[in-house]
Image (tube, rainbow, N blue to C red):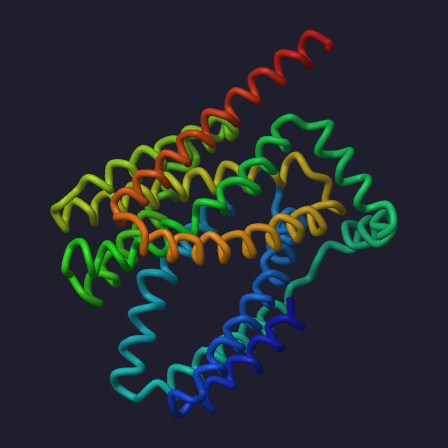
Length: 326
């Protein structure tokens, strides 16, 4: 994590060299490097949580993760805009890079439990990691559900990401302020998920699947909304459902996966989701040129519903077969 923070901080400084339209390639290149850094950082950070947190506190910590993400959406984006307006974009670029260096210093002070560190270094053999990971997934039906969720849902996430701006500007005529308003609603929903996540502590898997179903229904409903404030409320509820679902499934993954396998598994899932979301966003951009945005939103929401139903049916069937000893 320290190395990745240092790499991303140095990469972010390259934004300072952008001065004209001819330099736009730098923006694309640096953004790609930052995304690659996040693909390395995210699984390392997530797999470190069970090393530092008692199993009984995992749900609470994962709830705080959603609060953090929500605050980034609500406060972070606004702070960037204010700093850029008052001091210019160069100041925002410098502070962005400095934030990575500061994060690296904070991570440097984390002391991982010696026993856990010794256990991982002894058991984590690269040549056996993949087969052990597959064996672990085969042995746990809940873990199979989480993996299926992480593999399938990113195929549709790109549609949501693209449609936020399209809805704000094209459908509701709110301009850039509308984009900020919708993202603020998403951030508020993630923060609010902290208060609800603990309600599913005894049924994490069902909670995650129900929230995915609700998210799909809400996305379908959003495609038929024509009042801006109603759309803001829907985005809040979509984010609330998504946040609670993430809390449930992240906690379930951490409980079902041995510590020494969490890094490789999270790395694989993160690499897949980041790449697929990018392709999904590209596909959504192409689709908008051929169909109405609201129809695309309806199709995306329906896809969430279908995935939730299919995974639920798989879970019930597999669990019943295991219970019957088949």
